[in-house]
Image (cartoon, helix red, strand yellow):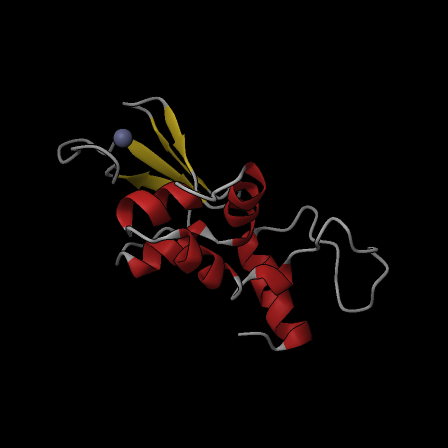
Length: 128
Ligand SMILES: [Zn+2]
């Protein structure tokens, strides 16, 4: 995809929760569980597993890791602009690397799951 640099890809994969994308697709990806792989023809035995903690889906049949960008591009058909726009909903929850961690309006997300980060973010900043 044009303009999808490694930095942008890393950013999107970091801030966009895979569980939220599952919701957009009408699937429940909040918990670690087996699913039919949405990236290949998979209808008999659930070939993939969701890992909300690492924000990934792993397909055992394909031996491939899928991240939020894969879901947004391949399943939702979004453009880079759409992805960056959607990420804004979540990016106040993540500490930009350039910011001093002592800033009062950011918090250390280390060891937190994405769900915890979003809840904590809501609590602190009332972000949408
Ligand atoms: Zn697959």
